Length: 266
Ligand code: IP8
Image 1 (spheres, rainbow, N blue to C red):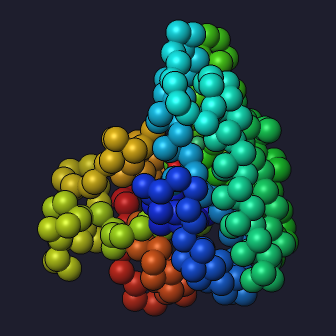
Image 2: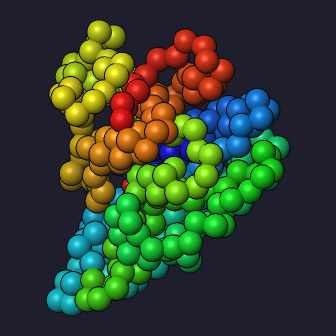
């Protein structure tokens, strides 16, 4: 199970700009992993294709009957929901096209079509992710999904999707969070960190620092990754945080060769 972080595959502060070269490199490494006989499922984050508009329209708070914004490209939260879903499909199409160019049989599962409600116990049948063909890569992503009750909709993070998929699908061995701009979990804020500040093994008694851009993010940033990663590790699955700008580190992990990053202990 590999999560492509939104901050890795997009320019986080520029609406709907993808880092095509990074996506391409990641997809070619995924191809190499499948050539080792290991099947991969990909979940990708939203980055600037999701968070900016979702934040402006407060979609993470659900339906707000009296909320309006002037001077925007859409005129209601409902329209913003449709726009963010479309933007996420655009980002997903880029990832899918790169996987296909790498020679993989990539299948997309947009959450707003099959999932509802929020958090790691969201509703939705995961059977669509089961496949015996190593060249088939099932792909899903953080999205705006329908929510029961007055909220009507909300943001289902890719971090919740990877948690449920890792725990509930049979035979998942490892979960890798491929992140942008950091080598793993750090003891000090990323801009102050040296090589010595990388936390190689994390368990709840180890303190860490991460940058959570609450002005941009509508989901939980690094804190959510750690919480969900820990939940998965407690289920006996190996969980790692790796700098996705050097995707060969993921291949090294899979090949049992030295790699750089953080392991989350269960
Ligand atoms: O980037 C967020 O998913 P994440 C999804 O995986 C949207 O947390 C639409 C903002």
